[in-house]
Length: 595
Image (tube, rainbow, N blue to C red):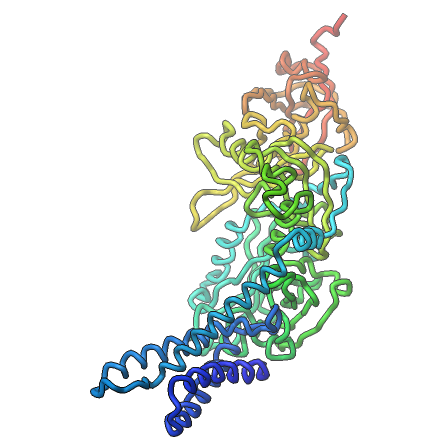
């Protein structure tokens, strides 16, 4: 750090001295200027290197930050020059104090800009550089049918807006007023002991709360799988080092001053191990090319209470660390891959834009196929030449390694078409609830869009409903919108099972149970243009079941249309968690069998 300060000070003084020497050679004035320039530039560079923390990396070894002190030197000298020049009574005076420093700093600023521009262009322009960046992320192509199945027990049911509202309320539980001093920092979705949580460190509300308190009580955790769970404020592990704190208490500055000034330190994230001991993780990175991109060199794990720093290579990082590569960096790698993996850099070599792809969404959701695997950033790729937003493939990028798996899933609707279907489904036309960024999951062996509807009140942002939609039948009328995950899954299973054009075998996706008895109560209801039949039944011993059975009158359940109270029936069903069950086959013994 101090080496960068000394070099920067010498450069600022040298360019100013060269200008002063050219314009003004009065020895006494020059000595005075050298003294004050040394003091001023040294103080200014210490300030900027300490607070701006320019990592000593990049094409100029971190010296690209010099545009700030050089600009200040040129501006201050220029202002003094203007004021001083207006005070001279001798119009024959040929030397004007500070004119040389202004000119010298301005020239150096122009030269610096040109050097940085040329260095950046040299590392980023041309087919060779484009192909290099496009292939930095290793992409493996898998079969479309190998898209990973999703464990429906661990779907992220709580969106970030809901987590923010819950976390803020946790600071006032029990009559506390911690919200006037602390606030939850950035929330991160993560797996702790086989369960998904949103976790955020408590950080200070401002400068004075930081000065008067020193540490924050701990962190806030929000259950990401259960919308009804309340947020929990954990105070057993106070936090001293955190992002955004003052002076050396700032987490990044603390790491920067303890041997890591030659790295870009990005993406500070609070992550907890399976014993609920939390650490900050930080990426020690370099630029990919010129001043662009992020390549993670090391993973730093920092104890937030003591400040102890443990360094790991990417392959050796602790198993509980869910995410290493920042989502913004992953987005950049995907952009390079889509732009140049199958297309040249120069536009005149491919003016039609053939084989160029882009992500269909502005923000890629984070998804887990199973919690014993790394989370992935999910990108639905589409052609840059068309506006139909049909997929050209699905890209799952590992957040722990710079590698991706591409699934050649073509032609399914992505982007705005999926959002429009969830927005305009009949059950949402009146209320117009907003929904979260849809995630493509594989449930009942079907590619399925999953989303969560929330209230449109940004101050409460409460969970409302779950939405599921078959990815091959993207339409507003095909959205299953239900008040709970269990109900949505059961109804979706019923929809998949009874879809006339469906050829997927879902018989093994849940346990089939059989019931023989009598209809006790039955009612039909139209949802999204589909008629559902809900009923209770008594068993052969005359005991009424507590399960609500439901089904669609289609194929193997056609006789539901004729079922009445008192009919003897036999049917198979699949049980959900909320005491409901979707009917797979239905036989009304009162209805004559087909001839």
